[in-house]
Image (cartoon, rainbow, N blue to C red):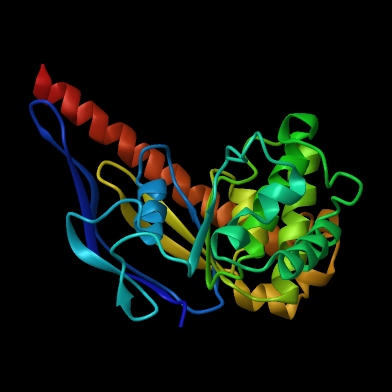
Amino acid sequence: MSEILFENVTRRFQLKNRTFEALEPITLKVAEGEFVAVVGPSGCGKTTLLRMAAGLDFPTSGAVIVGNREVTGPGPDRTIVFQQFALLPWKTVTGNIGFGLKCRGVPAAARAEMVAHYVKVMGLSGHEDSYPYQLSGGMQQRVAIARSFILEPKLLLMDEPFGALDAQTRIEMQEELIRLMSVRRRTVLFVTHSVEEAVYLADRVVVMAGRPGRIRDIVSVADIRRAESWDSRPIEDILEMDSFVRLRTKVWRMLRGAALSKAEGRSRELSIAS
């Protein structure tokens, strides 16, 4: 099982002279094989949720459960892809992709075969011996994604993975991710600031509001995606479809409402402080 359950999760941070409540009680279930994107204003706790699922941070109260087990730290069933590619600069493309397998003790011959497969799948052929500084941003992110997929995790956690890429490369990477997911489905929790990206990629879009972080609403995309065969259509066609535009607008309006609520909260804080 690779479902994720956030069960009445809160997160508070102790600052110098006060306690900052980052997340109010949040309950959210990500089903096995589901792709859930999380959007919301900066500081609303999106990355905190992702880090708790990864076992890199922990709730102040409540529990994060993955596959019927409470998360107490990182595990081999989960991998995370960051916005900053986090590649090892002293290793080549093949060295980076195969690093996790080497740490797991996979024999060299089997490791080389698996790495060669993902080099081909991710369009990195001809760059096997290149170092990260010799690659474009898009190619570096392909290496980072291959490094995660090769470990065959049950749960893939992605924190703004395409945020640092130019528009064209970002679209290519979105299409690449959909293609990879169609070959072997995984449970994905995907944090992004892009409404368009969230609606295009996800089965459900979780819209968060801030101060403290909370779930404002959840928008379902999966039924429309399947009914209109989004995954087999060019992205330029999907972006112009009425169904896509309606969903994108719906999420934008929710985000706009969240931003206005956040601004009102700041105004109240300033009023009290003065």
